[in-house]
Length: 59
Image (cartoon, rainbow, N blue to C red; front, side, top):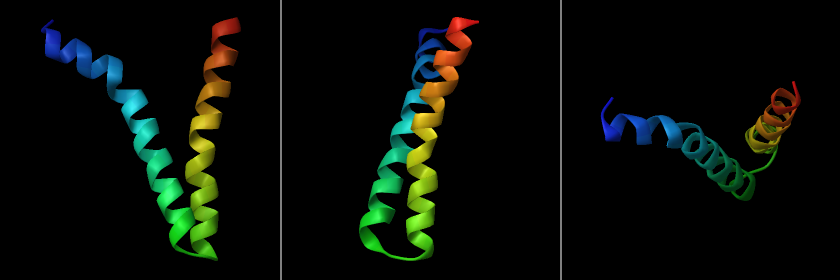
């Protein structure tokens, strides 16, 4: 396997979580109503990912 492919595999999920978090923060700052719900959903993704990782780590 090439080095670039390995780095992409390692950093894909953290990069995705960072982008979702940034998008959630921006949406939360720019609107009300439905945007607040979208921000809550986007900002809950990293929290759920940590919970999932902790649960699978114990098993």
